[in-house]
Image (cartoon, rainbow, N blue to C red; front, side, top):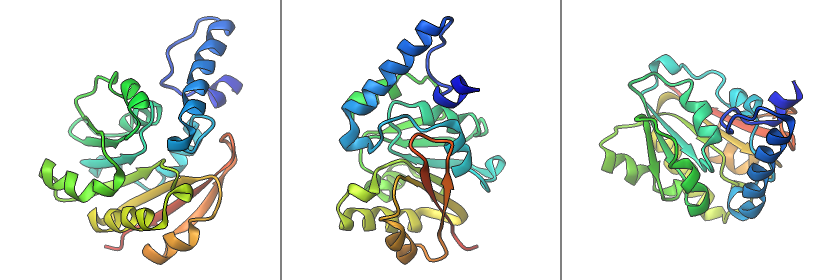
Length: 206
């Protein structure tokens, strides 16, 4: 139970306790090195990701966006839910993290080396009309307010009716802005994450 809680499912397999700790240490060093762009000191747990995805009808999902895909461990979790015909647009601006992300060999994955604020432009380029679900791991509470407003407005515009926007944060600084741009949004607390995380949810009205 402890190993399942601490270790992302996508980490390389470890056959001994020593190998397990070595794998976890390498992952943690990657996050600590890039904390200014990830806003995280630990990889997001499967519990938090599953919590963020509650209420999503994956059987109907064809186009999903992930903001701040990092090294790909959350990306793999999301891909595990998607149908074979779906596409996952993974936005990641950090080159170091993107190298690991690019190791995922899944035809459904489309890696976007640009910021989340370019979502609308990316969809136009990809000839995708809208997005079914957006899962965001970017550290919005430390980004400039105009940039966050742009990301939220673009997300709201690009989501299809009934689509869900989910955002992980480690404080509630962005709650007023999220509620302003996405009325009816709400936050829940996921304790099974290190550190415990606040999860923002919003469903676009049909």
